[in-house]
Length: 160
Ligand code: HEM
Image (cartoon, rainbow, N blue to C red; front, side, top):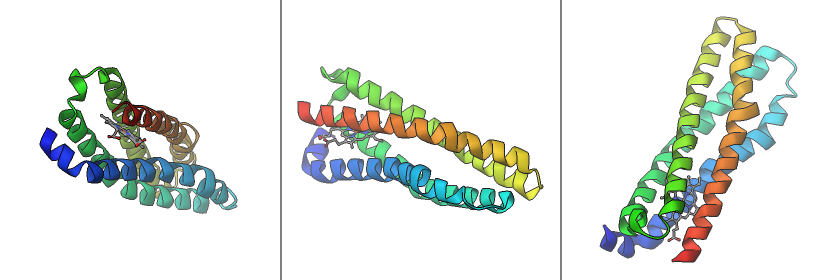
């Protein structure tokens, strides 16, 4: 794996960085550019429908990149022997951050699906509650964690 990593380092790090850009950038664009615009829609049902629809698109885009991020990370963990190196703490911190972000994303996907089901049943209050949690807390938490992971990535790349 060490040989594989050194031969394809440029492509692996490129895919790793691209995945972080799409995942974190996608959440920032959705939360701070698209979301405020959706809130201008007067009809609550239409507003919630549009938010749920946009989230579906966002999740469909980011999920493959979440997987690529993990695959490239595992290649780097093995290829660089990160777990046994002096940088193992940073590597473990990034593994932890990825795990929390991925679990948070999975819960957001289930909450969005639940909100759509509630919307179809005409339960506007329940749907609003489910979507509000995503926008108010879950996406911002993942943005902050993603930014910390990017900072740790820059720290790691400066150490090699
Ligand atoms: C799953 C555990 C992770 C591990 C083991 C890991 C490992 C690494 C390593 C070793 C580098 C340095 C690559 C090099 O320059 O040779 C790096 C860079 C980077 N990582 Fe991660 N990473 C992980 C998760 C993440 C996450 C969750 C994000 C963001 C969402 C992220 C974003 C970045 C970015 C943007 C860089 C590029 C920094 C630079 O080139 O200056 N990583 N990562």
